[in-house]
Image 1: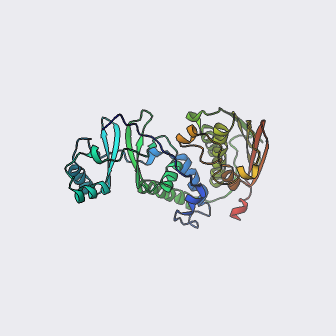
Image 2: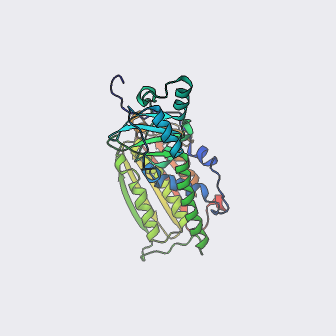
Image 3: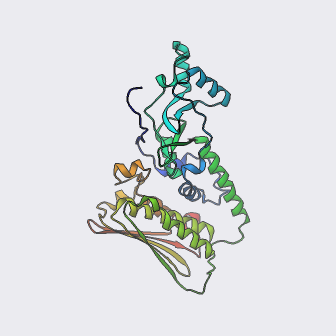
Amino acid sequence: MAGEYTPTILQGQQTSDDEILANMPLDTKALGGDSSVIIMELLQRFKVRDVMKRQIISVARNASLREAQRLMRENRISGLPVCEDGRLYGIVSVNDIINALDNGWIEDTCESHMASNLVVLEAGMPLSFALRYFNNYTYGRFPVLDADRKLVGIISQRDVMRALLYELSVEIRKLERKTSNNVLEHATNERYFRREWAVVHNDLSRAGHAANDIKGILRERKVDRSVARRVAVAAYELEINICIHSHGGVLVMLISDDTVTITAKDRGPGISDIEWACRDGTSTANDWIRSMGFGAGMGLSNSKRVSDAFDIQSEVGKFTKVTCTFNLTKPAASEQ
């Protein structure tokens, strides 16, 4: 093979979360009408590493296509990574085997006919971005690399759906056991609870940290599960926005007797067209952010969708402030 090959993450046309959710067959009645929010939370909670297959069946570069055919047949799979010492060199598919049989080169090496221009995922990517890749490309599975660019797993649509369906069944059981709705039992006698998190520009290693803290706080204070789930979704979207679309800022949570309020305020660059920014799939993220699996959309539409009240203010070159309010004493308008 001429030269060295380095796997790359290719970028395709982005697909919005709404399009993905619309194509997922779910029983919304069983989930109390809260299915899309539950799925959004699951997609944010899970990483690619959580659902990928870690037992990798692979072939070496000098293995014959006939050997690859045997492995595919015995393991009932339609593709094999060509891998040596953890390094991914290419993929041999069932179509490559068919072509080899038709053209008489089934004894050739895998290296001579493998696909080397690959689309790969990173183990630390949110699962939501893996779903976008399945929607944007026709491949049935993707190799998964770790931070050191070593092959650590394979992920297929079946792996994703199996994990989501299992977690959804768990959520259904929890909802069936629930005996009261929309109740806030304070762990302390505080009338108000306020906490603030700093969000640093492009600090992707801590992306989602504040949202996880918020989820834990709401759980400790026994906020109704369906409300806490919606708050966590909005907090995550707003935190990621500050991280990748602004110069940094703060995320603030305020809990009162009857509401939870999440406020995100950043330092520039501001939004000139708020209506455009609130549409699904709009993004100002650069290519580097996109290559890390972030920045497919600004998330404002998701934040607005799960909130009981939503407000956004922005001044170009100065700031953007988003406020999401959630009722603790009555269901969301979409659930009434």
